[in-house]
Length: 321
Ligand code: UGA
Image (cartoon, rainbow, N blue to C red; front, side, top):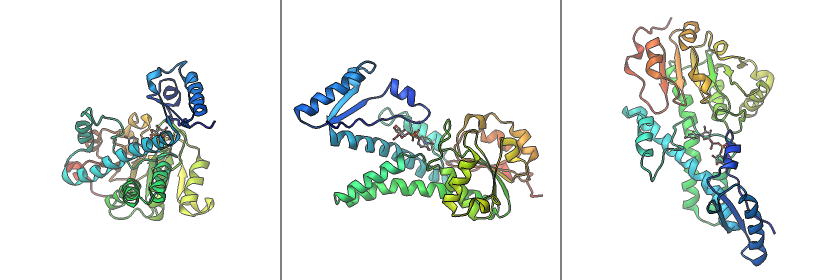
């Protein structure tokens, strides 16, 4: 018998997810042999998972549920990211909106953090799988609906990169920009489909000189990802990209810091010190909403982030050198 037993492990919490899953899903043929096989696999899980959390279904339901779970999570992120754009123009704060909306127990608080777009090896692939399935079944409106989740994600990445260029007086050519974070999320060295790659690609095309720092991603990996995305050889790329061993070095003499991954260590840095070593005016773009923006503004930073109107008073005492 062939059974379907999709996993719902997330990077960084895989062992916890395995030991205490929200549910275990086992799909199989609707035959006597199929149901015997399902029972056997279920028996293994019953050693540590409560029986009511083990769902048994037919194969199609099980396989489709895996795609739909990832598609729904991705859709929530794209949904809140569309709202982040409205917040930037109106003065609403996307974190406040997400909190207010997420407190509705029917909606829930998870996966409502606005960002520079979701990355990772799974979300985009699984949404595309769903789109492909809908197209194969000639369900064009369904395919178009899910395609928007991907389109919004691409748009959010580009919108953030444009925000950087526009606020650096319309050009980043020859400007040093520190990129904080290259992994697709914190607590992993994985860069697959990381939104950082797309932001960096845009800034490189605009002529910026990037100094990238990530606590876990290797410099070879960063060069390989960017070379694949930009079409530049690794040698050409080295003219645009330097890898820093620590965040202070990356920020020294830079015009701007760009937070791409929500690593905890970025919240604990000495931004007064960092500010003192940067070009003036100094800019900070928070793509993950992890820093205390008012505090940064009080130090002298010009701060821009997804889902929040830039603080009004930040251009005081900030004339370019
Ligand atoms: C995801 C699912 O969460 C797992 O349940 C699933 O098993 C796994 O894919 C898979 O199919 O193998 P993972 O890709 O490890 O897990 O990462 P997530 O924690 O889901 O984050 C995905 C992306 O969304 C990251 O770039 C993250 O930064 C972003 N994200 C997440 C947001 O932008 N906002 C949020 O509120 C949450």
